[in-house]
Image 1 (cartoon, chains in turn purple, yellow):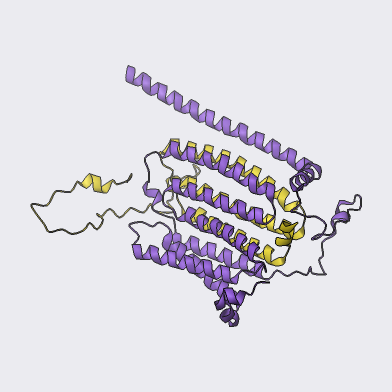
Image 2 (cartoon, helix red, strand yellow):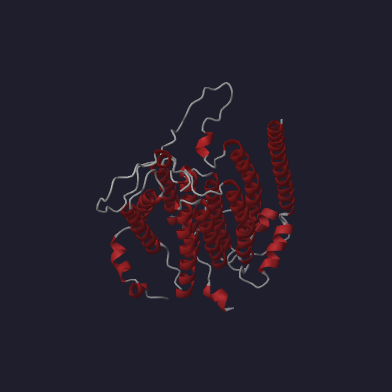
Length: 275
Length: 154
């Protein structure tokens, strides 16, 4: 066990403050700092942006203080680092003016998220997030961005719709979520205990007690995930395959329709200029 | 295995993972509500999906089964479909209006409904930035009004 009072002496003095109040202060600071950092019409003053950064730092430290101690310095440090990368670059994604920079910040956020997934024991998903998102989806976004907006920033990038209302909405959502997360307790309520997995499946007695039998960090975890995916969820996998096919055909159909339209327009324009 | 010993299953890990997921989700919500660039709006939607993925994996870790992992695999594939369709629509919208601005589509309506503008497009502050003041020498130059009014691509 780590003596946290030695590492963070101020946490001892925070004991008299309820963690709910700290969370409320953190959520409010987050909302104000995002409001200050979001691009607004005109030139936002440097002081406002610096205040936004300062409030963002305060928010992060408050979230770190109110977060649950994992009781292990290595685990704590790993989780803290990757989640800080994810959260900070997510905030930079939505506050960055240039959409290209926003996409690159989003790539960094994906790196952080995949780190969080790795810490949480999802090896396959951590790698798949990088491969699918950063390797495919993000590159597609960047292609569209460069096709559509080669000249740089437009006015719409420097103005946001209702920054006050949207930050308030996000803060309310985060406050409600953190309230319900803080109330989670280890004991399952007796009244509504879910049926066991073996009873639900009705098949052979799978004597798997949660939290002890399945080791998520075993070396054959990916193989077992594959077995789960193609065993219990085979129909869903087929459905997702059909969904991907439909999306592919739909995208090609829409694009080719648009291309035909623009080609006929272009050819008519060319004919008009030739005649 | 030292790794297993290092990363034990606990409620604290679940709560921290859920908290990170909630923060990502609400940041994505703020982004999708406030930004006007269509691409950045879709990036924010992907950010919300990332938050959901983190929460699902945290629950999966807590319960010790693969349910959350399987759901995240489906989330990934649905996100890929969504990105493909969305980018096609963004390209179509761009070829029609020439802008990647969602406000350009605020008058989209059915033929029987009256045209209403929900949100006036705010104009930029076109005044010149605060250049450092030097001692005046010679006559003052005549500013190009067109250039100062149409500083779109700075």
